[in-house]
Image (cartoon, rainbow, N blue to C red; front, side):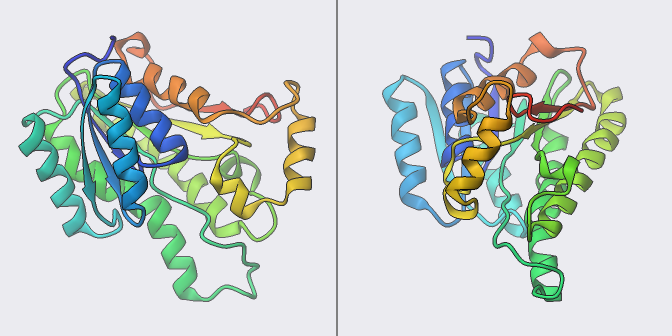
Length: 250
């Protein structure tokens, strides 16, 4: 249990990769604070799964693009588990919809940027004052941030690319405080994200293009997050680690 007695806040921690991460960190001994926004039932399911495996967790509703909701999340974490937060995992984000430049309006652009980038700024800003030396922040970027994304994903890819840069900047800023900041950049992972936004034939083509000839699993991403959250990665900061089966190399 390499995260025993650590407190972890996970935004978007109720489903898919977020759920797998919540379960993994709890299995490693962390006390987990799971943020969710729209899917309360999934959050409750994730909480129950953690309790069934003997872990400790709470769920907190909130929109991570709103400063007041972010403040409430961190206050609830402190009320439940004390004033130290050792791990922050910024999973919350999303494509929202595929739109070309002529199809999207200013409101859509702002919404997707806020969801994927501003949210990380707000949650990190609120959490850092409670992070002791040796703490870790793990952001979720994407292969789209490296290659521009698929059709209609330009604003999502742009936000994730910016988040890669923000991860490097925070690593420099927070390193002297003993806080490491890294990001994971998933490729084609078998989640509801791709169930909604990616055509089956495209998924099959991408999977076949990887040297490993398959999609990734949410649990494999969670394993990487747990490593970056632990002292086993104590000299790693400022990285954006690809986890895509070899379909693209950084």
